Length: 136
Length: 136
DNA sequence: ATTGCAGTTTACGTTAACGTAAGTTATATT
DNA sequence: AATATAACTTACGTTAACGTAAACTGCAAT
Image (cartoon, rainbow over all chains, first blue to last red; front, side, top):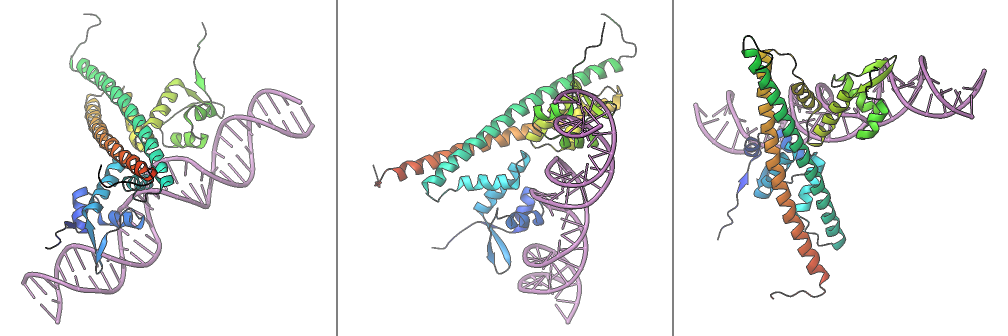
């Protein structure tokens, strides 16, 4: 029975997530990824791909690379150390708080956008009507 | 009848939004705020305060200062220029797309956090039980 | 044999978003 | 009059997150 594992080259991942190879190597410098090697070449596993996906998603919602790194650690505690596990649970709670705040912020922004759009469309409407009236 | 207007000093705003005065002046350098002056001193209006609030909120969801600046412009088109108004409507649409994506990202992150927390708690549970069993 | 990729390392450069420090001014208080 | 407090300007420093360039290494196809 042969080991059949999915792997990726750096450029494959770069393409998939629309980042440069430099960026991916940079994440490795920061210890966010630890690809295997075949000689010099980096070989990325499915787990690596998942982490990268998480990082990219994190960036979209404004997380720093450091924060994404902490998230990654939360997802693989493994250490079984009680103290550490409890800290992780704490961190998860804190992260949830932040995300909840973001949800609120996005909500009010969407509302604001609605208002702004309505304002624009009203403006456009009156400016398209050659001579506007005062009361109708 | 006297003009009664609410104004703020730079340190008042700094306190309210938990930023430094340096930060607020920096936003002015970037043209995001244009406070009035009383001699040397900056006098912030309610509108300025609102803009600052928007910027701070923007930062929480990962907007750059430049992006927040664009948002501010969307909220006060005023120019009545049709072409410009249509561009603004476009920009509003684009911004909505981004926010929608963020909502999705946050959703999956919250799910992931749930999973991670469940994992941690399970671990904690078994590690607290002195001798664990294999099948129950 | 060489041309051309895809990948690698090393290292300096760049941009955004402030921090920090130094020296100045205005107002108010003791 | 002296001191404190809050503001101001100017300017250099710092951190994060890469960009960009140079020079090297396989491996494959012409």
